[in-house]
Image 1 (cartoon, one colour):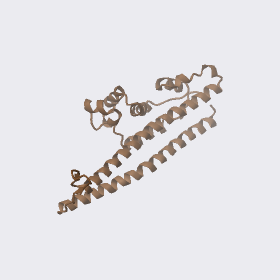
Image 2: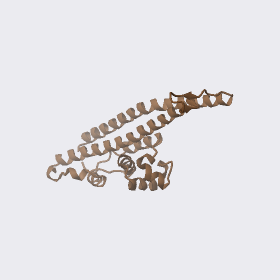
Image 3: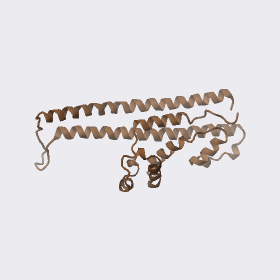
Image 4: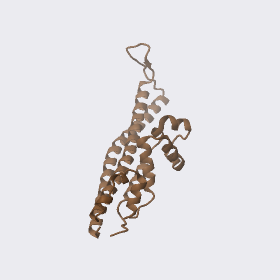
Length: 217
């Protein structure tokens, strides 16, 4: 790959990551703002209760169904929805940018090897697993080890394999708010807690894991 081709490839890679980051920020910021607002409303509600405010129970058509604190329930339901949506955006973003990383490297290696007359040796099956993809990349480029963390998270989130999730727990315990076996066994990928900081780290790692240092020209 010539210097110009290499620089263009790297530029395109970083531009695409930048676009993924922009999409993430626009998506998650809206929900984060809602979360901040509902927390403010909960604080205001608690202050009113402290000052003597009492809610009027909500009675549905079925007299046996009574919600004694409808406003409090509404606020906490809204807060819970915000938490779930933010978590979903965070998880989907990590899976998306890892698969982008896989696809981009597939195209880079395919283009390079076919250009060099290696069409007959090019096997699509060699790119179905991370280890084989990594070996093919390493024939042409330096590749950092940090991308393995994003791979492990993405695979655990996407497939929910309990063995992978337990391995993730052993390696990155900070990704779990609860670490007991019962919770892991029952909830699988839902036991993994992805925060904004985890997504920002993932973007940083993926940004630094593109075609930056060629071993061959």
